[in-house]
Image 1: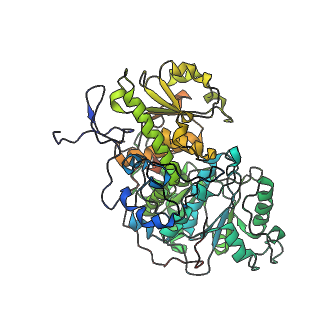
Image 2: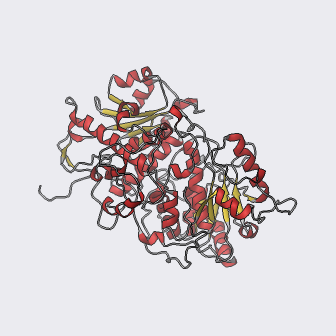
Length: 580
């Protein structure tokens, strides 16, 4: 070892040994050990071990009940880092590859300047009616808004969600967001965010007569005086949601038509300053081909980058005074938050903007059980690539990844046969190399044209590594495994592909392997004009939901520690922890 710094290639393997590439270029893993006190997994779970009532030897199977559900307590947990000892492995060193998030103590102390010290105000919402990744996008947006507005977030009841309600072998088929994210930990660790369950909210507010019908002005109670709606199906949830719309202020914002702008401080003067910046923005333009706007650029320039002709959504006085702000999800009423949080929310203070992006990156990530299962699969894929003996891929431990959407996607122009997929992707993939395919296509014969050129692998090839994991979580496993590929090809218009790309952006930013524009080694099969959309810089353009943009991950660590620390002590709504 000459001591000369080596280039790091995105998607590299976690082992410590040096790998020699096809051109004899020496490379090391993109997953370098975390700096002390920052992201290392050694300091994240040990102090909570007493909260787990089951002893699990590292490398052994996770505890599973008779219905195939994990019995590990997720609630008492530190979000930063990843340790898989209680989930059946792998080792912390191998699991570290999955970590793109960071532990930033000063971020946890930030409280929105719009959070007052008066009576508690709440935000409620209905999960999006689309597939999981549409549901995820809306949830990210709502949580970001709750913090920004200083409102206590009410999580929807456990319920069946579209396409993730399989009841295979009587496994759990109704879910809350706490099944997929460390919601309780997120609330506990952040000074500016309180989160409670719908049942707790209804007990505290509705059953005490505090909620009134907006038409009659009279106290209104939940249907049947019921506060526990967990486990309901669609019809049952419709009854609750329709009642909620009668006793709350229902937002009518359309993210395609306006962006929700937050002034740097409360008060009329601050709002006036923001409106003046908007007027200035309308008189400016960004020259084509100039690249991204710096994250700390003047307000009007940053606004121009994301506005795309949209007006401002105003969090007006009436909304601010309302104790209960509700976000409905209804195709019929045209109410839907199918957008990216970083496209819909705009912050006058760039430091608040980058904080919010870090908050989503560092805290709204899948629970450890899913991350650890994915880490085991990723490790097996790398071992498979390493031990295969006939290609240049062998010495690199690399695999490439694809997401091929074949199910209910409405956009026929991207649903093509296997031959077209091969022709569209062959320029970037390694002939004979190991390729992981995330897909909803059940007929494996469809992939024959690709199998003739690559060592194709699918999630079900590794089922022995995640026995007992709820099958409704397989899509999330697919995303995590695909996100670690050297090169990735995805399906345009798919929010499933979109989140894979965002995680790839987070990983690339952590490893510092992308250029200053935030581009990554991701491509689309079709349409042809979109093929290089992730590998070359593209500012946000509508329809925003069709893909992710570097705005989500590029330079978002700028401004760390510069925001004012919490000026308000976190309001504890109950002396008893809320268990999700």
